[in-house]
Length: 251
Ligand code: 13P
Image 1 (cartoon, rainbow, N blue to C red):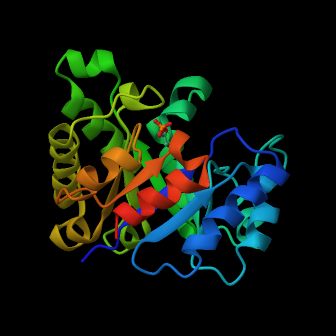
Image 2: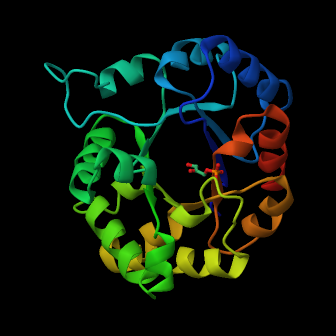
């Protein structure tokens, strides 16, 4: 049985004070939650304070990006060592906003994934098609290319620490959610690619999150699909009540 994983991607939101208030609100109801893995991914500036606030909690800490290098002259970058020091467990890699605004390619994402896995950080690897690509009937082609490219050379054993997030770009922050059928279809497709890449066992164990306007009102139905193992939540993760309700929908 795959344990569901609900992660809040706070993106470029929340000051330190706001972040602590938010995580305390989430903690109030979910600190002891074991049924679903709940993860919060604040901006880098709030990681230390949120990490302190999460001490002794079941809620895990994640971040939104990471350098593909170890250390040195890489102005503006953050390394795995710096993240590990703050007890970060998960790192979102290859989010569509990083791909489209900051030019991250599958090759770059792949280097980061390898760096994360080599340093006991668990990557949440994002893939997803644009509206234009979907309308042109290219969803599977685009998703397959991203999955194979971003996850190239990852072994079956390493896949135990990988989470994939399917985030159709047209559903991110738009209020438009993929229908449960659309989402389930792509999730099953992603699992079939992983099966082809590294075999049945790794494919069966892999957790695949859905992301794109997931909210309390649609979470239960999405999370009840056989290949949807969690959610990567943007807007609805910025408020304790809605994030808690989505986590509860996964129980
Ligand atoms: P929204 O939930 O705001 O659509 O964002 C999804 C997302 O990009 C999570 O990474």
